[in-house]
Image (tube, rainbow, N blue to C red):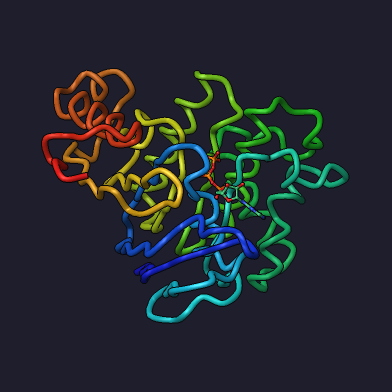
Length: 257
Ligand SMILES: Nc1ncnc2c1ncn2[C@@H]1O[C@H](COP(=O)(O)OP(=O)(O)OP(=O)(O)O)[C@@H](O)[C@H]1O
């Protein structure tokens, strides 16, 4: 269980970028976070991942305060080009964090092979990241997080730099991970459709300073697919509601804001 309590963060003497954020993510849940540009989504994720100390409030993972990156947590950023080591093979990039898990060489190799297979890159292990397309590199970054088998997966706009078809494939991969692994996942995305398509819940942050404006359950069946799910009336309705909230419009359910 992930709990964020009254989280506030300011950079130096500047006004706070997030204020009084409260949220809970239950085991196995995938929660999408959306909000206007600059409202503090990445700041929130960095505080949750222990990469940054908040100036107020706290983050608890399974009841323990987060003050550094927890051992059972993995992070995937948008900028895969900076997160993969160009001098290491794809296989070694994926296997690297497994040393932290104390796995031996053979086990690391097996786990990295399986993770690469799960992202459709079984044959790319011996290549170097720079020999792959952007979408493939991002799949390597995702494979690295999956191989690590974290309990908590934090993703900051992970599909933002890939083409539309790859994005859909990666969303479907995320849905499979969500279903199979029981991981608790927090995903920041700019894509409102994506937030609904992959999420159990969508949290909308307000314009800067970011506060929780809405926390909306996604009442869609667990089995989703790119065509039929997006045609469902519940999907169309929720997408419109999230869109209005992100743009700062009033909604029937939110008359006072
Ligand atoms: N390291 C930093 N030092 C100072 N200010 C920062 C730092 N990181 C972010 N900010 C500022 O904090 C605010 C929120 O940034 P953040 O990246 O968290 O927002 P975001 O919602 O993720 O943005 P976007 O949607 O554009 O990616 C912005 O005004 C940004 O300039």
